Amino acid sequence: MADFALTEQRLAVTCRRYPDFPRRLATLVRLIKHIHKQLHDEANLALKPYGINHPEYNLLMMLYGSANGTMSPSELADAAGEKSANITRLTNELCDKGLIDRSGSADDRRKIELSLTPQGEALLKNLLPDICALLARQGHHLTVSEQVQLEKLLKKFLGGLAD
Image (cartoon, rainbow, N blue to C red; front, side):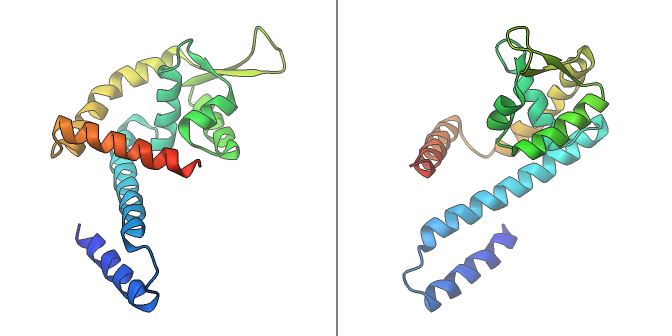
């Protein structure tokens, strides 16, 4: 949190220079940015021994959690919060690693479907205990009630961005 103290100092200077600046909201946005970076870095460190990175893991988990085990590239982009150009690069890498397959849709030959390979499923089953431990460590200081409250507030904040 020492890094964030410098951010708060810069926000204070900004508010003195521009009194109408919304310091509280700017602080929230910066906190979210700092949290994202730290979570991303810790996940990359935990995933490195498995030969994948955090964005690749997210795509694998979106496929793992899909009801029928397949998603189109655009569905995957929406679910993972990635841009379509990045989805193409990431899915190419995952295909090259043998973790996902691309195939034509049975319903529409123009549509591409992505799915986990048996190797991809095996990788997830091997790494999920480490990811569960990482998530538990990252959130250990929040009670279940605080986790529920934070989830509600973040969903409300996210929903408000779409307005």
